[in-house]
Structures are given as C-alpha cells and as structure tokens.
Image (cartoon, rainbow, N blue to C red; front, side, top):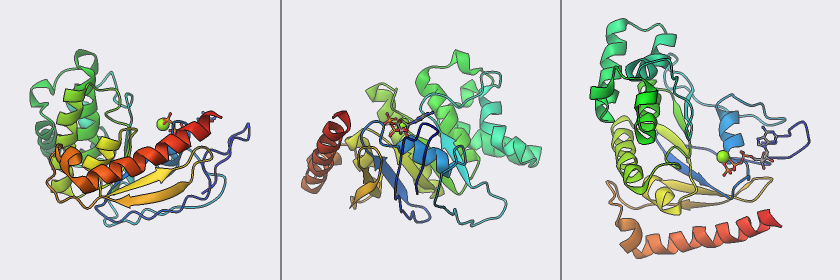
Length: 245
Ligand SMILES: Nc1ncnc2c1ncn2[C@@H]1O[C@H](COP(=O)(O)OP(=O)(O)OP(=O)(O)O)[C@@H](O)[C@H]1O
Ligand SMILES: [Mg+2]
C-alpha cells in the first residue's frame, strides 16, 4: 500500500498484511511512521494512492469496521447510551434489539449507572469506555483502535485493558490496535507488527504465544516475554533514532 499526500510525503509504503478472523494484532512503530494513516485508510477515512485491501464479510449485515480514537470520537450532544447506540441506530435495527445490545455493552464496561449522562460529565477513562462499548456494540468485522488508552493514567489503563480483553475473548472480534507501549502490545496481542520510520513499512512481526487469560505480571516474569520486550525495544530505538535524523 502506498500513500501520498498533496505535499508529497510518503506516509506508508509496501504494506502487506493479513489479519485472521478473531485475531488481536498490535501495530508498534516510531511516531510519524504512518500507523494512524494506515488505520484511517482501513477505516475508509483516507484514500491510498495505490494498493488495495479487503475486509471479508462473515455477515452481510455487519459493518466492515469501527474505529476507536485516542480521545475523540464520542458525540458531546448525545448521552452515553445514545453514543453507544449510535451505529446501531444508523442501521435502523429494532428498538428492542438496540436497547438490549446497548445495555449489555454499557454493563460490560461498567457504565450502566451513567447511561443518561453526557460526555462532558465523564472522566477521560469513562469516555474511552463509551468508545469501546460503542465499537463492540456495532458488531463490525474489525475493530481499529488508535492508541485508545494512550492518554489514560496507569490504573485506568490496566482496568480498560482487562475489560477490553474480557470483551474480546467473549466476542472474538478481529482487532487492529495501535500502541506506543511495548507492555500493552505484549499483554494484549496475538501478534505484534513492527513498523519502520517514515515511510512506514512493516519490518518484522512477533508472535505472542503467551496463554490466555493473561496476567499483567506475566509480561514481566516470563523470560520469553522479556526477550520479546527487548527485541521490540531494540527495534524501536533504532527506528526512533532514524526518524529524528
Ligand atoms: N493531515 C496531514 N497532512 C499532511 N501530512 C500528514 C497528515 N497526517 C499525517 N501526515 C504525515 O504522515 C506521516 C504519518 O503520520 P501518522 O499520523 O500516520 O503517524 P503515526 O505513526 O500515527 O504517528 P504517532 O505515533 O505520532 O501517532 C507524518 O509523518 C506526516 O508527515
Ligand atoms: Mg498516530
């Protein structure tokens, strides 16, 4: 895949990747290497100048993808439950189905009590929960998540990571998740894709075969995880230095 902006910056180049149904894949790479660009292309929010991608449908009534952004993405004029129901309402599904699904995912992310509130009354972590509940409620083929926990404090981040894994293991959704955190990538994913500095290419992939359910401390104590951490860290060091030259 090749992407050129008007000022002729090549953001990403020669990206070839296959993600299996139900797989959780993390994308890690230096700032500015084109991770968001890749996700936006997959979300249909940007056009690539050449190349193509296909999202295979397992159900024709399902949307292709839902995106979870770092901080944006929930609508301030809608209540929490209206935000979660947004995609479902757009598909004109039955009111009772929408209510049931919305209630289910609000409960999953611990926001049932806040259903009638507006985003301005919520903390950053709660807003991210709304985004996550909405993305899962939407039941799309693939979830595209762009550093959804990047702005959160450590405790909230861990809680949301656990919630995400619990909903993912229940729904078996396909997830492509961008993160700057190596720990997060090791904890969450089945596979880590490493990108080079701009123009971004996928230069390496690392399988994370740690059994699930995982515990956060496994990332620190399992020797194989430690060596994978170091492998990713070394790669990032080189690429980050390269991107600053
Ligand atoms: N709206 C834009 N206009 C022009 N160039 C852009 C625009 N958005 C991104 N770019 C270019 O594309 C490159 C890739 O940007 P992108 O946002 O995809 O990087 P990223 O890997 O997501 O970075 P970060 O980790 O900091 O979020 C940037 O270096 C920038 O030069
Ligand atoms: Mg980005």
